[in-house]
Image 1: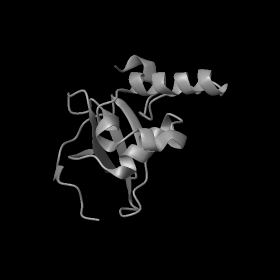
Image 2: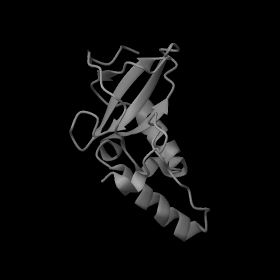
Image 3: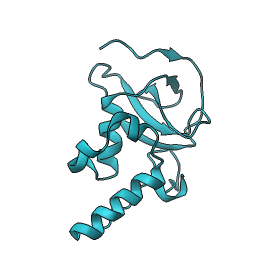
Length: 128
């Protein structure tokens, strides 16, 4: 896999993030970040494993989509969520999809919080 077109920047992890591993880059931690670049869409970032400096990576891919769906407990309905659809779904919209699934199928309530590095990680419902 070719490295996604990247733009170097250093930003604190202050937005809703879903961390995941990218097998093509085992020394890095990747994250799908909601509104990381100031737009209401998911973007990608990565860091060496110390997670002190993050680099924004432009684009969106299947790994990010899968990580987001897994975080929100929606993997079993993966076929309903295309890359373009997930790319523009906020954490609040994704958790609402999960809540519908919980009601329809009697599933336990899943509390989804950001993978941000902080003492009190924000909940998905806080990010529309």
